[in-house]
Image (cartoon, rainbow, N blue to C red):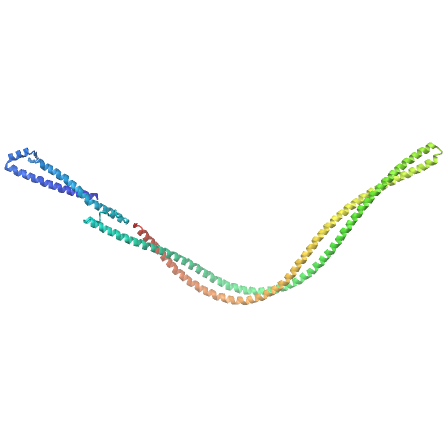
Length: 447
């Protein structure tokens, strides 16, 4: 836009120069006319008026030069002012046009301030550009709204189509699996029917075995009760044995006390025999002193001494026997004590055995009852199995019919899946186009 203002200034300057040139030419012609009529007077007049000589041999008045210079200055100023007045609106309109070319349609009244009121061509251009921007802005706003709706609807359509594709795919897959499952179910039901027939036979055999087992369990229960009775008897005898062992231990302990008492008596006898021996020795000494008079008394003393020694030997023998008896009774007491401990342990073991027999009896009572209940249950199962076998035959036929129907539904689902996939593909293409349109429309700046 600076070029336009420069061109305007140059045109004004050329116009001023042309006017100045015309004035100079007119002055030259006038000077030539005067010089032809009275050259001396003309030169005198020019010299007197202060004219400057021209290169062509004539003089141009100073006032002409001053006028020429003033004309140039005024022309330049006027040209500059006119250029600015003309170029400023054009520059503003050009900036707005560039802003419009960049799709920037933001309503800025300051940009058009003072332009719309102009009555010249710039005002007409400003009003036309203002209306154009308003029209484009309105169109852009509508396009943005429509594009947003189209994009939103296309996204929703794509999502819905994807959901339908997945749903139909799952449904088709489920129907395929259902058809396959129904075929397998029909085969399975037939197999179950065959198996049930075999099961019925096995249940008959098991029922017979259960009856036999119940009889054997009853016999085992009788044997267990007999064993339990024997254990109870053994426990009673064991209690009696414990009592006898206790009494025997007490008797041996009393015998040990009596032996100890006898040992005390033997000690007394030994002491008496020793004293008697001393007395006999003293009597023999006194008899020897008496001579012939004490000879008979010496014989008696010797006999008494012999008896005392025999008593001492007998006491020693009794003491040895008592010691052996004491050792034997102590060993007997220890053995009786050990026997009592063993008997107590046997009693405990027998008690455990008795408890075990009681538990076994309770268990066998339950086993017998279970065998009876099992036989009754197997009988009911046998009857129900026959009913189920009859029902499975009808189930097999129904499953085959249902399998055929599901295969037809699966084929229809495949066709619907293909159609839905085409819709989903088209909706995705529409979504891409809507996104591209939205991106292009969003380039408009309206706010």
